[in-house]
Image (tube, rainbow, N blue to C red):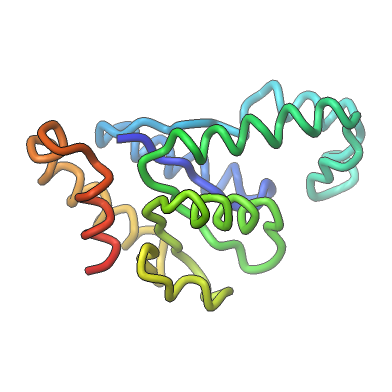
Length: 162
């Protein structure tokens, strides 16, 4: 099963990367690792990391488009989108959550409550990232055979509505 993790870039090191690793250990695939070394190097070269939180708008327009399209492809190719809600900011992760919603993707939102959209029927809300991880990996490991037969889409949609 393919998962896209969305959160604020400054939270990549303490949220996205370690949780992606734990998902991979559980047998899941990350659809796109937007926190890659290539992206970080480009942002450092543009001076957007040294000054504090990442500011992608300092990148050349073509590079902005490339990274935005790469992120959206990651959402599009995922079976599930996991939004690890940051305490503040995270404009990109909310854009990605909206795109996932428009595509009808099953979505998990964990962390502090930040939006009424977490109440939508295709979204499952968790108070903590750890509880989301445990529930998701338990669900996936218990449904691999069924997913092989019918695909992850219907199973995930039922799970997020539970």
